[in-house]
Length: 294
Length: 346
Image (cartoon, rainbow over all chains, first blue to last red):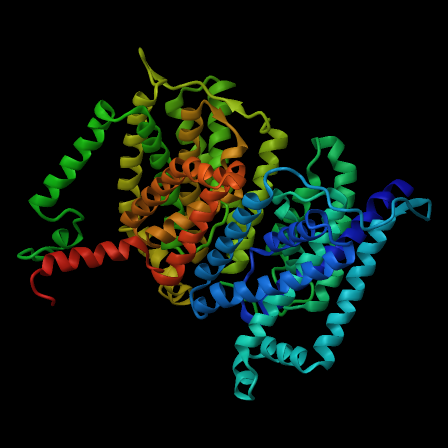
């Protein structure tokens, strides 16, 4: 029992970070219908920016984090303005491919600037952990949950009560109608990208604070796609349930199956879930059933 | 637009790919040139030619699946990997001759492709893209963990009686004949009933279904054909390298293949070839230029080589998508039309 919990609990807690990254994904999808496959690169480049600010420039961690988040927001705006806007109204393949091209550009920049070594970030969380039901939970994982939940709450309030947040919700609901009542859709799209980059960077800093940062780890961001799909592409709340769920599955399958197959289950579980969701329930747990079937 | 003075008098004439004697002459001369290339080309370029050939076969399959049938696949390189590993295992472990192993590898990749095509029965568009993305990671995992992928599978060079195709120059002929065969196949698949069904599904699947096209069957067929091409390409590459390794069949490679058909032209066989040649040549050039650039900017030289390639390539896709989404094939059509109309504009 405690063995299972020791796999389950860190998995669930990591899942909260997946949910955070997935939120960025859902926002872009809901506002503009774009499937952002550069999400993985946004996650990792966030971690690299934090490394550059804190380890390379020598700033204190707090300043580094704020700086990284500001840079990430800028990056999101930039991508939307330069790349996504010329492609509004293009076929779906073009839009998917262009996000892949952005991913390639970001990856190229990462390789160029930071090279092929795994870099370790400055320590953010104290070592050690607390005991819970006989399982030791590290502080890092506790922080994962804490930061994710706080950020979710902030975003919830933003979408619920601020004018900009409400206009984003309106665009997500119906682009034409919101345009006709005077919402600037282009501004909303830019903000969707900025927030997506922001939550990705946060997720990147959190996740790589344990593992160290390397450009090949973009799979973390792509795993968020499985979370999104399991939760339902249109559902913001769905990711908060699907994230920990997939994190739990990852933890358990990695714990029990890794010794059998020689490791690597963590990288593939999410994608197996993705395929199963697509085959069985393509609109996810909380998505709209409006999906085109044919 | 047909060349001046050429008219369609019969159905066969209308359907013919090569219309005039001049075109026949150019085609034969071009093929002769291709066969004569190893006689005067340095070994470096022979390698590039084989690299291009393998890319063309894989990209043709992807263009049939994505460009003609409209099913987006971000996993083509993984299916190449399936072909490579099947060929490697068949040749090395089961001693099956190369000539049988390659088609079997293609069929294996096709069957795996069928499995990952099943979601296409229920979903389309970006959902399907996600399924193939998952296929990329799952196949990579399976190859590494169950088929000895980390070190790879060694493949011995093919032989036919006393002939052993171990050198670059000899393998070039295998690659060349395959690429001609598969271009011929692809060009004709898309002109038949099957190809027209693919195009109908791409343009409007509901209308296609109303016209009596069995959508599920044809979508799966497109997956099978596309992945079969990929499997053969992978098998050829593995035999040429003497090693089947997952390093060659990553997500990045899948993206490159998609980029090639976008740069060349979606739904165009000639465009596929343009795209692959264009991208591969640019890739080669960046590899040539990178060391020189490295000496000019010494601070970045260490990472420049690997970064420059991907930067240049992403930029090319980006610019093509924004400024010429119909690809090089479209430019080629414009050039042909204006050549035939010269000196008049209409």
